[in-house]
Amino acid sequence: QGGNVGTWNGPAPKGQGIAPRHAQDNPEIPAGCVQVSREPDSIILPGGVRMPLVGLGTFRMTDPGDVKRAVELGYRHLDCARIYGNEAMVGEGLKEYLQSGPEARSSLWITSKVWNDAHRPAEVVKSVNATLADLGCGYLDLLLIHWPDAWVPGGQEEPDSSVTIQETYTAMERLVDEGRVRFLGVSNFGLAQVEDVLSWCKHKPIVNQIELHPMLPQRKLVGVSLRKGVHSVAYSPLGHGVSKELLEHPVVTKVAKETGKSNAQVLLKWNVQRGVAVIPKATGEAHLRENIEGMFDWKLTWDQKSALDELEKTDPKRFVDPAFHQWEDAETGGAAKPSLVFGI
Image (cartoon, rainbow, N blue to C red; front, side):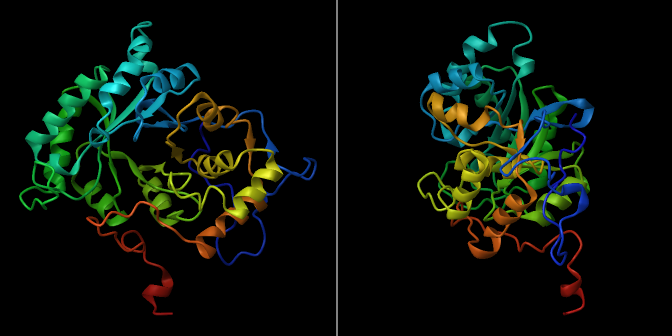
């Protein structure tokens, strides 16, 4: 069922004036969203393992009741991180479910991340030990390097030149060999950085978790990474929690009215429909339901996706932009644009 996950099924490449035939809207379906029997709800990974396309971001969550409620509503993908400082709370929210039966743990996909001040190999092990103890989940499905920026242990944001990404990742690979982690990945890596890891790693990264939404689609990074076996997972798929600039954008609101969906559902669908997993934060039953229920029973039309795509041109925006990180040029890595090669 997941055969088309990773394909955009949307607007033609720049320069094409017509919709590709495979993505044309069915004229027999009335205006609004395209109703479908069931879209793929997970990404198929090596070994046939499935990673759910809709997850729960736990950043700044404080109530274990919200975690428990999310699992009751059908969430099976939880995104955590050591720096969030709440993994013990997440573990408390998961405790009852994890004790409900022998298949409970294997039904969940749990991600965590190594923070910047834990890049040294010994610190990687300490970080994962603490994460597993707090979550009480036995093992991690996915462990990520949170940022490619290494700091001296202690949290003072002092750059650590004594450790390389290769040393950090190799320490993570040993945790896979020990059975404490199933898969590895990275976060906030540019394409050239992903390609570098692929050139020497023992266990390929399966995920690069990055900011993705219509204002920041990062198409080259998503597409080339996918062709190399690295799936993108979208954080901040609704924009920034404080700013409503994306969530309340007039184009998003217009598409939401056309589809009969909420603005949040439209933005999540924009990523999910191109095979990109999303991990929005949500608290309270209403928001938790909004982000997952019925997500795989409809599709945006070609025109709706095209309208949302225009936000990259009219209102480009990166919401998560910490001062400590220097972003790679979007054209670094992969094949260069012909216009750059020939100086057009």
